[in-house]
Length: 391
Image (cartoon, rainbow, N blue to C red; front, side, top):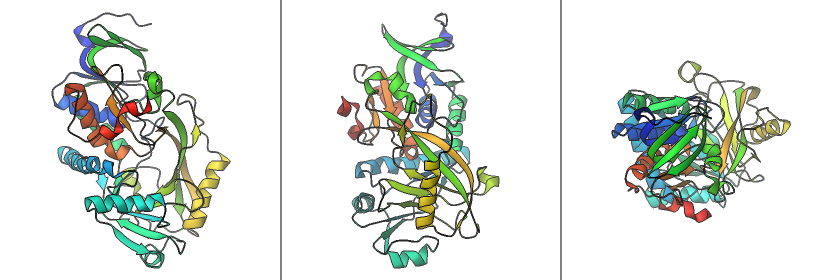
């Protein structure tokens, strides 16, 4: 048990628990506005135990999950551009994104709906036209192809490191290898206990991903952490699959729920390892305790990868280069929770339940969290992501 001694060194305007995707961005926006910030991260900046590892994350505007996300995405794109300008480093790559699926599938219908409402460029073609444009894919004759040219991917580890570094440059304190154990309201402040010390703040932000249910027990039943599998495979020939030759892709399978997705081969000298075609299955996996996740590759994992490769990318597979496991934190409706914490609305903000599609929003969610912590409100349209829908 750490000994409590209240000094200026452990009193902060805002404490952020979890310095991953959303937490690192929140630390950046808060510190840039001049607030005294402490970020507490149980692992490192960055790490492979949560949801942000893996080299790339798709970013897209024609959002099939719900058109209410599109204004947030428009702001996110602008904020990613601002981050690039501030650092002189590229984080967004406009590789384009092709969607394949039945015209009646919710993914295809949702993409068209959002694109139509917000005038998002979208090229629509049938399977024959798609076969000429994307010859590596074997597409069923009743599938439709949608191509979103302004979509692409964001580099997650680079982004988190940039936000943390910039937050430090603006005066934020970030502790790594320190686990938040508990927090409580003490008079007019919030007290946070870690495995190393005790801290005090006027405002607390909980952005701890799959661990959010442990730090905000009111959501323990609503948020389920699931084990997700990602693989990189080596194509027999790299030509045609490299960045700027091959798009990001999403396929709504006609037999299995959810969708499959993937990326071009990224140059190792620019993006590091692994070097291969990254692909994964976007659907909640096995419910897991985030502290006790099976990180080993299973036979079912490999069957799922072979299924999508054999069915939609036949004949290109050479070998598996690498595999990883990551975590989703899923809400019942698969939409985020971004709100003041019920019961602690004056002092605690929570961002959690990103359900496997949150990273692309980090640049705007960090801004939202800073707004909520500082003023209790934000001009960004996050009302549909309120916490009370699960209480």
